[in-house]
Image: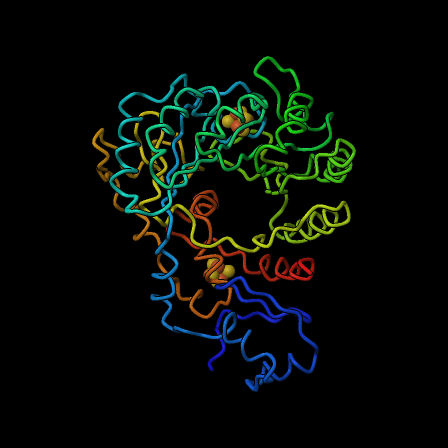
Length: 400
Ligand code: SF4
Ligand code: SF4
């Protein structure tokens, strides 16, 4: 048996970045495995999760690209009832909502490309619930397929009755954001007229956490870093405990404003994540097993189109609205006209020399295209976060 090149030894754990397997071992077992002498009682598990089936990196990548599910995204509108301080679409905010032509094109696209597989659509915005009828229209048109959908929403309009209405049409989960306790959240995520949104979201969460899976995103920067614990306290007090936590770092953007001076420096990201997950565990929240699974993102998978209201196709959600990063246009019949071949997933999925011997490759694939652009390395640059990954991988011990 050949050990996988994607194995990482972390203290008493062995973790594989390709399979996602992690096991806790005794020190003597670790020594044996490292030397290639696999103890008999470990043979089966090592074979399944930590051995190599193919050493050819190009084939490994090929395997990761073959997905059993089609996952397109439809940006229903650039309009939003919020005006969050760090919104990455600030400079692209337009009064546009999805056109009939784009809806037809999207439905036809899915029908042409699902090929009997599961279809998971994400509705994105702006605020997608401003276009509730369009969500229903698209879902009805696809309901005879193996169809489900999720929403990335600010949560202000996601009442129990809306969830009920959408559940029969295939709603699988929602992503909602809370950035801290009330006084912090309301300074960051407020309505266009300046009113805070915390109370409305908490009221909705109390009801819907029993009706649909909720991913609770928390956007972290230096302005809320120390208050994140208070949010976890508050969620417990409110008995909002069924949500899956999903912390992210606020990052800079194409449109500079003073808020970007507050991002967490790269070299502190791993430490902040470690503290967050340890605290989440202390507060009784589940630690999701896929906190390490980054993997090949939508930017590399051309069939997982990200379409905006006007039918323009972007590499991923973070580029939506930016005319410089339109990679194609969606036709009404569901075909795609490529307008910028250099942004195609295949053309951006290059294995850089420095990545060839890196055990984090299946999680990273050379990093995020958007962050590479922000770092002025260009769309095809390397966004290496190996140091951060090495530290974050230590969180595997929390999964016990
Ligand atoms: S809710 Fe989302 S789209 Fe709306 S302003 Fe906030 S970050 Fe932007
Ligand atoms: S970008 Fe860095 S962390 Fe990612 S695969 Fe390459 S060397 Fe590894």
